[in-house]
Length: 190
Image (cartoon, rainbow, N blue to C red):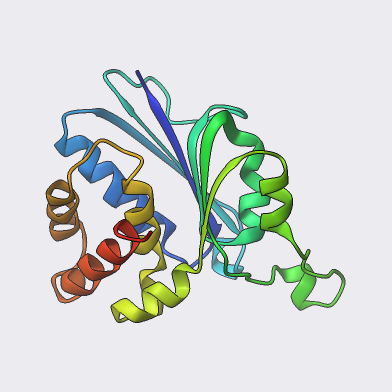
């Protein structure tokens, strides 16, 4: 059986490291893994989406609408944008942070209010967390990605030790301990 995970966010939030970490742990488990990264205007704060598929045999890395087991969103508006890709029984993990897109920055649009409540009202299974505050607690605001990976890890059949090993082999040495702390804070979140 193939699992489909989408990691969505805004350029510069660490979605690519999150996909590499997820891919590493799945390869280490012996799964066939395919990853596809789609960069919008990522260098300008635009949308970035990464598809991670793993299973016994994976033919294509792309995930179509209604196929994602998990959508992990680094920002609220991205959660809303990619929600149609979630399976009916899938799970949305979303950072409650808001990052203004260019139309909002330029004053031609307003950031929508109540996004997470609107998503929850549809009956979707949602874990919404202030991952930015947790990341800061771990030692760096840039660790939002690993906090979210920690939260997502509870939905996968991978041990804590296997995740720690993947962090050690994926993250630069000087950031390993901070990333382990960020992962555990997300993983142990109640």
